Amino acid sequence: QVQLVESGGGLVQPGGSLRLSCAASGRILFINTMGWYRQTPGKQRELVATITSSASTNYADSVKGRFTISRDNAKNTVYLQMNSLKPEDTAVYYCNAEIVAIATMSLESYWGQGTQVTVSS
Image (tube, rainbow, N blue to C red):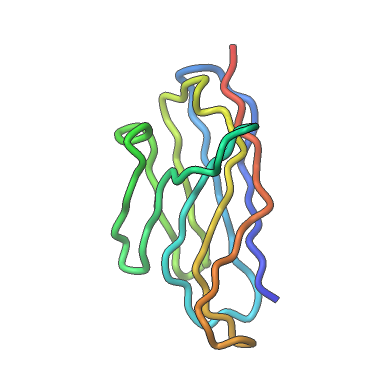
């Protein structure tokens, strides 16, 4: 069974930094695009950043220049380095990955459980 496990959330002051990690585990044949999304109460989940298997990246306008997404294919892990954090970055951050599992042999979307990021003084 494929799982995504996130870590690295927490409380940080405005202007501070956090690094999120998300590791995929299980019987995995291939991981395509990986990404981070975030959600606040009463709002739809929104894209933060994505990175393809060839390391092409895409960012939401609101985080460009402040956040950096990267991945380690050997570890099946995606990272989100968040700098210059603002109170409006407060949200639950979710990891997503498009994975071909050996059990299914089809490309499917998987989500992590979410990690809380709170930016407050």
